[in-house]
Length: 219
Image (cartoon, rainbow, N blue to C red; front, side):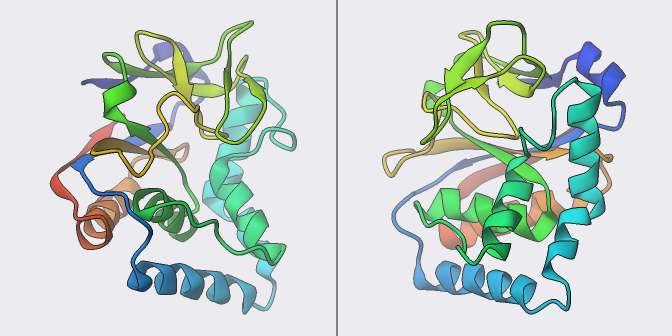
């Protein structure tokens, strides 16, 4: 499987870069150590003198700027990292789904970067990161049909299956998933990914019995 960035998206978002991690995993409920770490990160944010300041972090503002460049309203279509941070600030904590999904949410909150997570058993061929086209939609996880036109999306040979706003039900990770790809999305360059790719591998190995973990950069 090859992950690439479409040139037209790159022209509008010239600093976009992706951190890709493939792994063989197990996805039961999160172990207590992972849950404790998630709760710790939530508490750290809530104890800040001005918790809402995290919404103005450089990574969040870069994602908003990218959405604007693609013609999408970032106040209506938020990146998943911003959505998680807003959930924390509202006192709702982090959702607990399974160990692998919970790892993605943890690293997203730590990095302020949106992260896509896909079950490779349901990915058809190579993946391209591109802008959504007119009339393209899919059912987001736990959501309505998402209007993909102008959104940055991940698309395989079958069509779009993921976005920094919401991934699709088609490729979502469940407790039965064994092979995954996690894609960290940075609209402010590849430098941050040098830190967060290894962090993702560390968490996969520690909390999801991750093995055969391979990390790469796409710029």
